[in-house]
Length: 265
Image 1 (tube, rainbow, N blue to C red):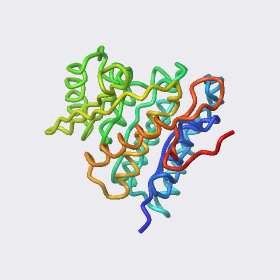
Image 2: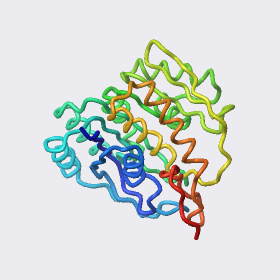
Image 3: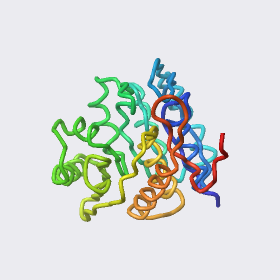
Image 4: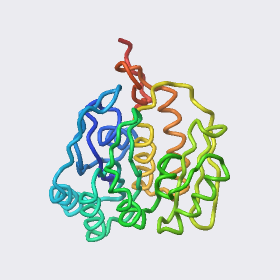
């Protein structure tokens, strides 16, 4: 049976992040992708100029429509925008028994523009984190979730353990350029592992977090174990960064189809 995955996230009109990045990733990894749109952003490689959250009822209705007919092997959340949308998503995920949920706690875009209302941060902690098969925050998002600074590798290890105690079954804290060899910390309550790769020097990093979490979701939908899915997603995003695209005047997108040669301009 063809693997199926659902992304619950916002739209990026520039095509590099959000629901567009997720669907590209699913397709690149051989998974049939479905979507539940939470918000619309007017966005390009330079930044976000406008955001409109959708009615929580239509967000929930999209999830119901997909799960009740097509089915979902694994799902992921990205931009959830508001407390009301978070509550609707959490209730629907519980009601329809979504089996595997990857939570990318999107708060701020690569450009620095806010994608989560500040008063919704507590809802992410209380409503979404306990539903997560794995949560994939970067250092800034980890600091917000825990209310403390996360800078060093030791900070990352300690933070991963704290997030598991708050309900997530597993955590991947992304170190990015902040730590040596692009080190991420994986922890599932019993096993802690450092995931390392070379740092890819590129200005075009738009959609990196969305793409990484979508890749984990895709591999889980295909039947991989959690740690295997995370490892394979790390390899995939590294390849996408190596083949990132110089599109637009700002931070361009990663190359989701990096195993395909993009034609020259």
